[in-house]
Length: 196
Image (cartoon, rainbow, N blue to C red; front, side, top):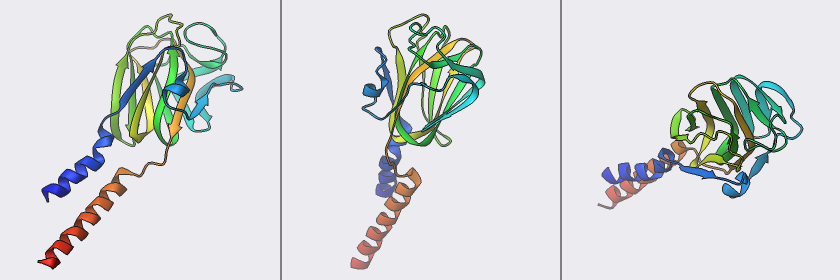
């Protein structure tokens, strides 16, 4: 029985932690090893929710996709500009194993939290970007995958989001893996018992 429990813990352990992705230069797609890139081109407008292929962006307030301050605060071309929200949610259409985005203009503590359903995978508070223009980006990576993530700012402030990259892979659900492992363990146990 101890071996079964240990095996279950090993199978489910990838859920519990994630790798933080950080860097400069704005190349979020290379940082996650390929995938899809959302540049927000052709999406100019005002939103509270913006659905793109693969990711839906939702703000606690309203935001725009525009060229305000383009070329500064880590932005290029069209990007998300938010002047009054304290949080964003990124809802992924499928299971996403890696995601990263360029961010700028935040003067307060910002926390990125990744979730798989209702299970917290990772939460990381990161450095304020202020007026940086070095292409600072942040993201998370986890083999078990993310269903959504939240970006929370300690108080309402400007935030810019650009070059949002994500990568999906077919990831079996943890419960399915656990049930398969339990079933195989049961078959092995019954064979051992019958052999005796």
